[in-house]
Image (cartoon, rainbow, N blue to C red; front, side):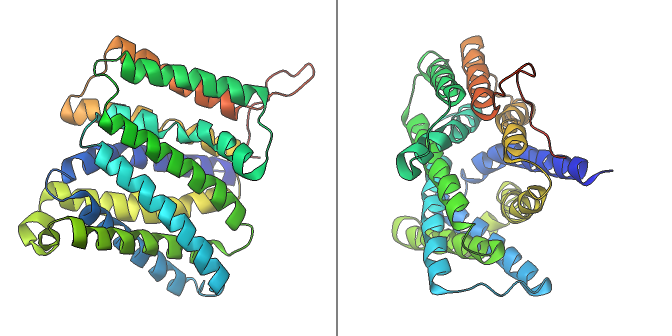
Length: 303
């Protein structure tokens, strides 16, 4: 199997894990509060990345500028995952997944505002289609646009900003130290929030932490969905274009909806399904580059 195909399968695996973990996290936060869950999730993920750095001798690259930039990325991740996880308390798994996926179409808008990048016509068209999809998914769907949807939309903005600044800072620093610092920052901020805002003693309750729903969510979300997923993405992007990676990641809400249907029997009405389809179409329009000439649409490739 070629490196390109292996990388494609790796990214597809990540999309499946990220889609499936929506249901797991949704079940876990019924028993363990949001900041407490994120503190454990990102604490375990940072330990995993730290262990990998020791084994692979990737300890070089730590400096004050890297720490500052990593902290900025960590703050954005903290805000993104906090609003996403809180949003799951008030909205459906499917809505959360599809609204979160809007970060793909928000990235070029954020890049235009912050970095001065000029968006393409297909990008603007994709944003418009995705916005229409958001309307049908929420306002015209089975349940009106609610507090959970609003929190998840903020989450999508935070993730879009994280992607933009990651693209900037990754050119200046080694990947592993930058990843480690931001994951550690999320864990510290979440732990601080849990100590001040939540019943932090539940973190020490064996019955809560040892609950099957909580434990499975922690294992999948921290080790597979955070630590391993970031490593797979880092190595896969050595052999795949960013366009192909983004297109595969656009399948994440599809896997989330399928998991929600199979595990908790969550179903989407026709109007919401139309909105979800429009969001995916908007993502495709945003990510597929147009090539002038007789070749028409230039499909992404990894070779």
